[in-house]
Image 1 (cartoon, rainbow, N blue to C red):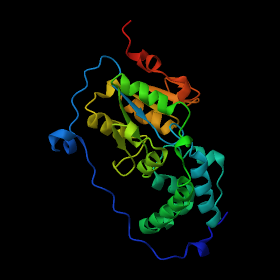
Image 2 (image 1 turned 30 degrees about the horizontal axis):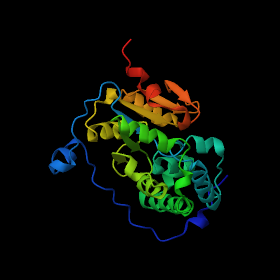
Image 3 (image 1 turned 90 degrees about the vertical axis):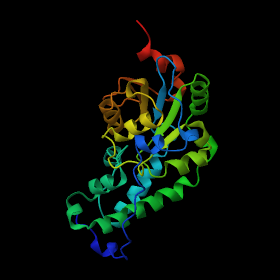
Image 4 (image 1 turned 135 degrees about the vertical axis):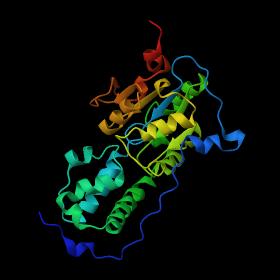
Length: 257
């Protein structure tokens, strides 16, 4: 189906300026009160959560936002293509949507389209309430904190902090790594390695909870054990949701035989 170019006539926005990428040195050189002590807990020391599809179900929000944009451009879009977007950075998703047409767009034009999709998504995100957090999320986070296990959200979404604020979960995590904090998205392991460094935790002592294949691949590349929410290709173990998880279950890979 040909691209409807007539509907893509709009002023070009300046390219979005990404925040500086902070790594190990960012907290090493920070004031002492911002540097967490090295964890001493035996076994599992940190759990890294994906956001969409794990802590909150916003998959429908993304689907409707991409579908809205696709309809404007008269491009095909369905649930199968949407599934391939899970855990993938926004600009990479846009290239998948544009397909063979992607090469005809300048980066500035792609930025406008990506921001348009994000606007459609945010219109829905702003309806989130604390009760929209995934069942079992608050109980699991409370259990982990009481046991001295550190927690992080590691998400491709640049809206992760807004979503956590709306769910009133922001204070439950020790750190957040989102799409604006890294230069390479999942399946590259950069995001998970950054979270581990910020938490001062060895990657092998971190466990990742994901619902997307790209995230599982990134975690495996970072040498971190994985738990998939619902069947996810490559996950070492899978559960139906957070209500199926507990500290003993997450700690199992580290148990002494």
